[in-house]
Image 1: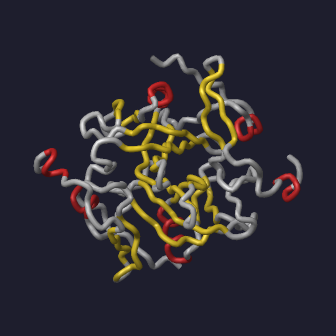
Image 2: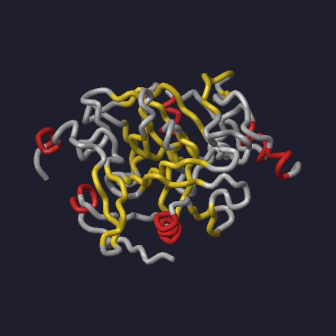
Image 3: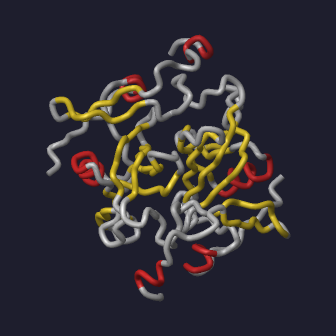
Length: 151
Length: 151
């Protein structure tokens, strides 16, 4: 696995308009990945990849991330079944961010709280100056407490 | 400006399912913001906000960021006219990422290279093992060299 290789970072013009992937990682060696539903375009989650996770994703066609909290590789769906098949990967002008267009297997949810998208709440007008949140997804796809047990 | 205030971070349950915004910033004091077109859902760019930029965005309804390269506030569109009117802001389960649904003023482009979206290239199958890029936007909205001059 992982015979894929990326080109060295070039000058600004090459990075911004060139025909080769030259990812820019942050000081932890990570690049941010925005994950969208290939059918609806909805943003499902934001994850982070190191070089190896990005290579595994490209080579296998299924999304791999680097878990910052667990400091380890994380194949999305390995335990939950919510595997992400990657249909397209986009990069931005300075190549320090990715967009993954995916379809989700299993129960079709992405969020461990049970919703289709991790972005299931929107900001509401401040009540008493504290900014509030309101759900935009009316119901959960599944109840995680029934799948994984309470707590 | 900026009478808005955010709640202190609560426990996991409160952050993940609660009704108050409790943003989690990285060690540079920033939170990632994914910007999408409110009409098409297309991902336009990824930016970063500090607390003050997020407050300005909420209060003014126009997107403010923190420029990591320039280390300063950046009101999108201030020089280019590509101002982003913010229709909705979503946050994710652990509240360390935002999605902004915006409409873009001026010439309607977001990317300084001239394209509608900063994500104007997709990854192609490796040629000679180096991962390539291919444009997904067929043409630029504008030619930045004509607007800002060459170089």
